Structure formats: structure tokens, C-alpha cells
Image 1 (cartoon, rainbow, N blue to C red):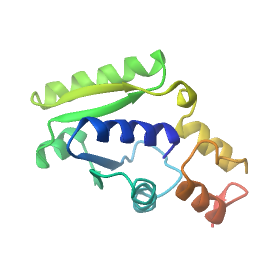
Image 2: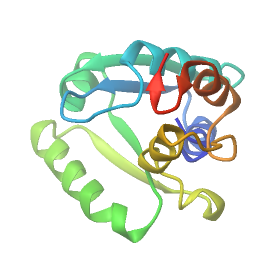
Image 3: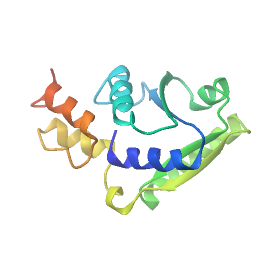
Image 4: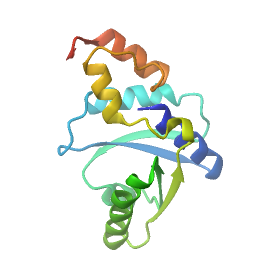
Length: 151
């Protein structure tokens, strides 16, 4: 989780009565941390934001949305380069679950360069990531990540 994610969550909480932040376990990606740890860190990072609930799931987002009666997805966009992939995903989701709408929020300019991939690479190489991630994430990485290996 980056400050960009946190920004989108905070802004979403101002727009809706409840925001469910769903952490997906995607076998097609190689996350730095296991799903359970990512979920725990996210819960800690958003604990002071009213109206935010953190959950996790495996599988298709549309299935999770349908099962939980979710009708709106909020997706963050950092740059125009994000738009193509996000548009394709939104259109696919709409085809699979026509009642599901996707709303895009643009990242604040100061977060537009931060990506999970960049944070992951900097952390793997022992660099400082406190400028990119909330304190619970930074603290966890400092405590459990050493010289490219989770300990």
C-alpha cells in the first residue's frame, strides 16, 4: 500500500457512505507480502478513516462485488498510461457484471509517480521507502525485510 492508495481511499470515503477496500490475492502477480499481511497492514493504515472497511478475497473482482452487493468500484489513475489498462478492466467488469460501475479518481500530483512496483524494487534493494508508504507499511518492511529477503 502506497500513499497514492491511501489518498484514493480517503477521497473515496468523502464520496460514499461506506468504502470497502478489498485486497485481492492474485496468483498472476508476485506481491512482496502475503495476502494476510497486506490486509493487516491496510487495516492499520486506514484505522482512523471513518466509513472504511478492509476485506480480502481470491478470484474475480466482479464475483466479489456481486457476492457483497457492491455496485461501484473506485479505481485510482496516476497517469494517462494507467488509463488504457484500467479502461479495459472496467469494460470487462461491466460485461461480466452489468450493474457494476467504475469511477476513476486521479491521484494527486505528488503521488503520481509512486507505484507498488517501484516501492517493491526500492525495498528489495534496501532503500528507504518511508516517503512512499504509510507508517505501518514502512515499519513492517523495516522490521521484516532485510537485504532483499523477508525475515
